[in-house]
Length: 286
Image (cartoon, rainbow, N blue to C red; front, side):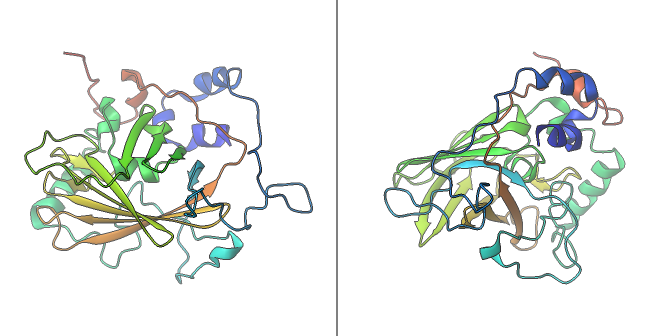
């Protein structure tokens, strides 16, 4: 699984086999999840019921990998109880994948996306060793880890320089509109039945939602809905509401599979990592 994500993630394309082979000697050995349900074959039963935390809510903890691949031509409501979820399509490359007509850009945003695509996405934050933003991290081929506690949920994204994100569950409101903007904004969460609803605001301007360059501005808000329909599946519905860049809110769905015997790998972005972007200018420390 580690080799696959090293070969498929955009960030690893320039580094190639050298980093891949050198990393194999330093990985954690495979270790199963304590208490994981097992099938008759002794393997983890991914279609078993989702685990519950002490408060009775679904426990979203684990290492998760985005299910890549083409969407079915006829959107099938996957039997979530079977663990067979449809792939997320190419949301990492195009957040509007699967939306009729694509993402509902404002005219200026549509022109900006055309320019960014013509430049081969050379200004993508990933190309400059800068934070990619929540949407790109959520749909990235590299995995992410969720650590759930009663007062906060911590998300660790391997594919963005091992970025750590805190989602506060202690009832605090979002900061006021004049708060210092952050690359990944400020996130608060609450439970709606068995769905974790996360609201994020306070983004910096000029964010990227995908590799093609769909913008996210400081006026944007993001609502994520996390569901764990069974032991091995996680569904994240992400609604982007940014009236400055889009004519209406829209939702992208990212489906994930559990990696029961995998741990995250340390990932460090260096200038040469992004040279596959045509015309990319290495980021120099100030």
